[in-house]
Image (cartoon, rainbow, N blue to C red; front, top):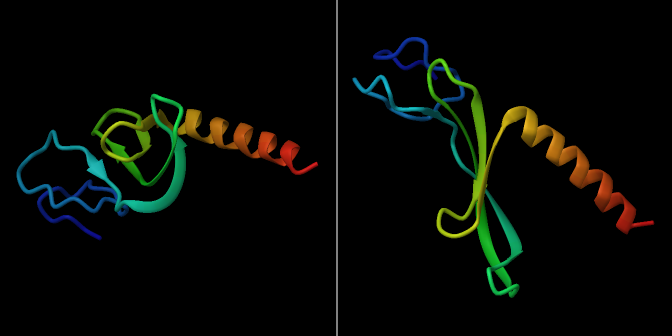
Length: 95
């Protein structure tokens, strides 16, 4: 997708920036049904959204959360390292 008012907008950006140069680039959101623990340690069924974002001249981040009380926003290297570690530990549960 080409943004004519902001030609350096990445192809994955889904934001119509208009004239706002400081607004971050954001990907479309991808919804994932999840079960997570709330602050009282209760299991809660919810929907998290994965969104990639990047401000011009700054590193990109991956946001994963419900938009309210549960969220994680990591730099891309941190997100990749966390996913690899989670995958390795989940494999241990299946042994």
